[in-house]
Image (cartoon, rainbow, N blue to C red):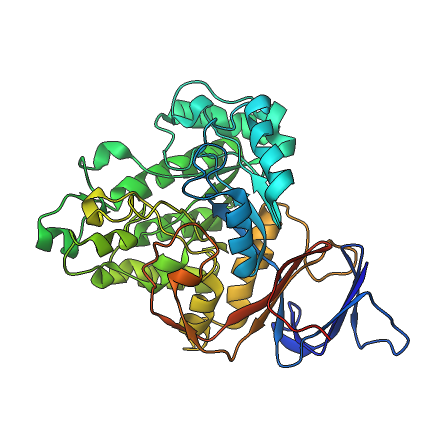
Length: 434
């Protein structure tokens, strides 16, 4: 099938801006970009006048909950939500039942992906058997060719000796470790927020910054020793940014991600009553930290220390998120709101150039995780189209995800996704075709 995307303003990485170009794809592969040939015919023609065309976004950190927890999210719902947010590739974390820690267990997840996904969904395998953060390691050599990488997300690998051996095996398998850096020995029982001003004011146990940056410092030393490709999940502290910046300067093979909520919020945005049912939509791990941490993350985004913006889309049931900051499950949804929020509140305000935002949502994650797709001739089609002038507000009732917990409910946004195409599949379409 040949598709023509005409009349839109297409993002050019070379120029870092939007240019008037037409795009042509055939059988799911991009074949040309430029002026529309006068003789061209197409099976489907999309009139994109007044709209912006971007390469499909890539999220290297999502939770789609299948198999095992489909009441929270399904691959069908999660992938549709991703397409609604402009994403054409996502990497799904292994917090599942069964844990994808063997070829047989991984096959269960792969079967659901083949059946239900409307975009490219790449699974992670666990680092440790059972995703326990300790004990035996998975057979990375047997799994590496089938997964985006290896992660025990939700748990830090506790012992340095275990992480060292994991890095060694991962390097031999030519894969990547995507690490949840958290030292639970530094966290009081029941802690759910940052150990800062908010925690002190409400006499609540908090999650200290050291529980994140100390494991990162440990792993930097191990990465320097082993040469493993290493990626840090959901960075949230200024000390983490500083450590990663220094490691990069020294040539360590390290990248990192942060999430939209850490770039746009801080502990000052937490609800005054931490026990109110509504407060649960502000609870995630790591937690919202100080405004100084947020500012350091923004600086890290601008100077290249932070390579990717990943949503850590983590749906839970309404009941699990209605128990305040102390009792609610960790995690919020975000894959449908990431680009609209970041474009409106970072790009339009002049804090971050559009080129930086698209680089961290698309180009760098694809490069680091060796993901194909985009607007380049010869590559699988991966594109998304936004109306950058549409005004709306974040409304959880409009989400396609089964999860509804977002700290951004009611926030104004000026970007609405109109079309997402992944290969030869129209994953999301809110256009009137010509």
